[in-house]
Length: 345
Image (cartoon, rainbow, N blue to C red; front, side, top):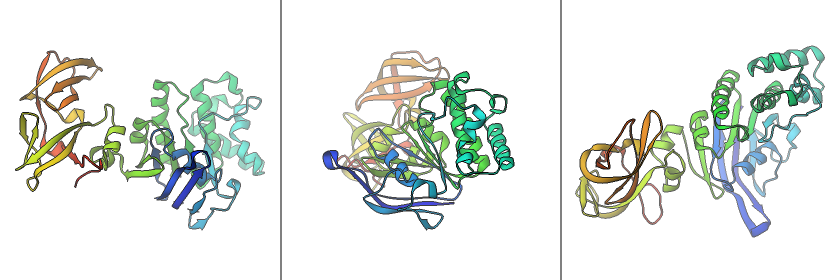
């Protein structure tokens, strides 16, 4: 079932700041859409307005073609997983998973069937008669997800559900969650500040900043062709490199260094150039000095000083040396307006 928000505005009295500023988007039926951005960008407020936990100042929320803007949360056909586990310590796992079904007065046979199905999906079948205190953090988070799944809602909302897990567990559970949601085929709207999570989970990613959507697209489209310097700098670890340059006759001039790569139709145009760390070569003749080398296992991350300032360069494991010869493949270069920071197409 699709979800459409149109021209949503939410202003908080403190500072008269717009948490969401005229946001419009559609989550297609069965799609996994991730809202990502820094703290305060409006992603959780947007999710809560879809859930019915916040009331917009203006705009509409439509689910499956039905305007639900004025409806309470319980009448929207949604289930939600919060950042905190929000499971009941005095109830066993079985009762926690079935809590939403109990509230809906689902018949016992169906209750049992749906609880068992959700528990199996989340690998909780052996823990149904345990209390939350007897579970690990990852298992408790799975209980919260199982409870949302058991309700069999039309739309699943998730507000940073993995943020309380340690890094390794978060990575493991991320893969499990993607597999489970794909199997269910439920329309899912997911909020996170973690760009790696957004990239790995979403069918599409919406990057928010200051209450607006800076870019909406597939993870790789947003990563490889950011619509703004902000998007390029926010997505990616390390983030996209940027340096000022002048374009003339299809070449870039950076300090006293000139190399091919600029659009042929631009003459003496000032631009901001972006390039990903993994796209930069280290076997050419543009001189650079290695300031830091960080082995990361399969690769080595270099901090390199050159004519354009400082760059992050990702190269093969085992790199050694204090000097490098850089290359900038023209196809990997992205150009931004130095005044507006928006992409130049």
